[in-house]
Structures are given as structure tokens and as C-alpha cells.
Image (cartoon, rainbow, N blue to C red; front, top):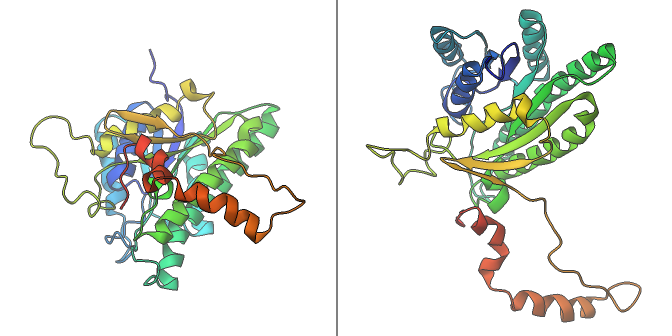
Length: 312
């Protein structure tokens, strides 16, 4: 039996280290030719000179295992360079089938200490970077669909975060960008479904240089399974990229270790109707103040508790 991604071409951004590396290796193991994108800056805050080393090292790993890969070291947060990335995949492999958006940086600050530059940098790499590659991949699939006269094969897997789901006090820029990625995912999923393209997002929980502070007290076990190893996230990405996941679209999934949780879209918890044409301040006070006063503080975070999250 052929591997499920045999003959497919994939792009993975931010694939020189951590999650992106594990995802690129998994897609290659499943048979895809992989364009490994990584800007190569050494600092997790986006600092330091860019370099080809990280992307080229992953390409070497894939080739050593018998796979097909090539490196791209452009900045996906730059619109033109993101277009060149998609163009490279099409030129070298004849098309693009899978896009995994993973590239990101961190500049953590409390909101009252956050600078404009730190806000812009994080939103630029995460949210704009996701948009840039998505825009060019979507245009490619739309053109192919028109030429073919029907649906084509296309998969996008975006990377959100539980910082968006449960909040993260010291990461307002990161949490906002990751929330924006979910909005981009659901919108794009609706727009591209008729072309045969699915778009989903994951919230991975893994020990990488991006999360070294979060999991500082949770060292990898000396023996046995490490539930926070990036390699445990990669199979879900491979699955979402495969034909078997054709019916999954516009979804958000949390993944780590041996757990995958399907996140439900927000639902109305309670509704209050005015006895008049519109609400007055006094009427809202009479309805909402007792409602929230009667709810234990923890219930506000019920969704987070279901996923096994903790408030920071």
C-alpha cells in the first residue's frame, strides 16, 4: 500500500526546529515532497541574523531517510517572499497540495508593558504570516480548480494556541494573533470548500524553544513517554493533510501526547430579553449583576477545564 501522501507536495513554515521540524518529518514519512521553510533567526523573539542552517538540516534529515525535500529560507511575514515560497513548490514539484502554517515568534509582556513594536512583530509573523502563505496557496488552488472544472486537492493546517482559548496574562499579542488565526481558518474554510480545499487549525501543546518558559517545571522524563514531545503533535497534522480527513473542515483541535480534543464553536450560555423595546441600564443591572454574582469564578473557565487547562 502506498503512503497516504505519496505524490503530494507540502510546505511547512517555521520547520527548522520544534513543531515545524516534527511536522515536516512526518509529512515526508507519509510520502509527501516537503518544502521546508525557516527564516533561521536564532532568537525565539525574532532576533539575530537569518540563516539557512535550520531549514537545510531538516532537509538533510528527510533526504537521509529516503524522502524528498528542499529548503526555503524566506520570511513568510513578507508578502512577496511568501508568494515566492508557494511559487517554489509549484515550480519544483508541479503543484502544491498541503500548507502547514507554523512559523512564529514570542515577545511576552504584560499588556501595560507591551510596546508597539512587540505587538506588531508578533502579529506580523503569526497572523500576517499565516495570511500571506494562505493567500497564495488559495489562489493556486482556485486557478487549478477553474482549469480542471471541478474540485482539486488542497489542505491547510494552521497553528493556533491554547493561549487564545484560555487566556494568557503575559501574552496579549500572542493570544490575539492566535485568536485571529482561528478566525482566518474558519473564514478560509468556507471560502475554499467549493474548490476541494479543507482548512483546519490545531492548538498544540509541546515542549519547544517557544514554550520553554511555560513548561520550565516539567522536564522530559528519563524513561517512558514524554507527552510534551513535538513528535506527538505531528501525526494529527499528517492526518489532517491526508485524504482520510476530507470531511474535516473549519475545525479547531487541541493536541498533545495521546490526546486530541475537538473544540466546539462558542455557544450561547444564557439569554436575557428586555421587557421594553431596548434595555435600560437599570434593567441590565437587575438581570446581569445577579447572574454573574451567582456563578463561581471557575465556571467562567469551564471550557478550559474540560481541556485540562489551568488559569495562569
